[in-house]
Image (cartoon, rainbow, N blue to C red; front, top):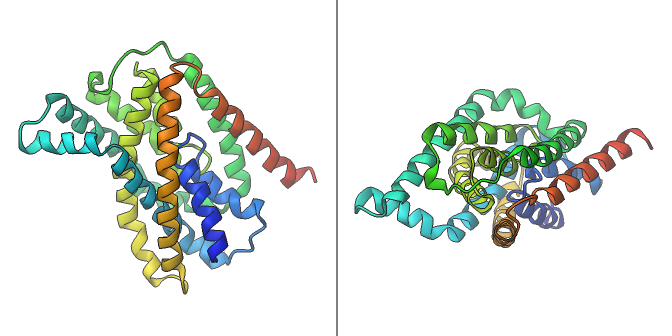
Length: 273
């Protein structure tokens, strides 16, 4: 990845990581759309660690944006902070467990999907269906995060593990599951963002060290990309939280339409021309 490619890739990743449109699918589709002839060794061995480094920038952005939540959760452990913060921390831990376990067990078997443009486009379309139908099937939720039960948090965490397949959005799947658990749209989005941080940090611990033994210049490019991705992720989470605050219902429709359009266009270019 050269400097220009890194800038383009980081901007796309920073925005799509938090929007419910699958950043990993965009990571697969971006080189195809821009006709980048990337080294096959990079795609096979270093693409996932490179993307995870960009996501690490996203994790920093989320920590900054939700810093008050994280400070309150940590205070609740050591100094008797707000009881609801301790409950939220327990729920975040519970929601992290399923995706963490599934990622450790099945990451290697799913790794080959990360270079498949066809599968990314197909699952992106399916992701749009999940967003559209999932929100339609949900009731008018009025719960806050602290109203969830641990079992419900585990189920939301299980849904976010769909993101191991490129095309499925982690934030989208977890937000839809949150709707089904009765959360308000803004609360579902907030819980999804809180769940993202430990998942991204955990993936980084496993994948980022592989960049040290990677191709020449890959670590420096990924660091630049991580910073840039974090900046755009901060803008994205600000916009997303405002969107869900203003649109308590049918907020997923634009994202569903986007997934269908992009997925269909990619498949048409692959097989109709």
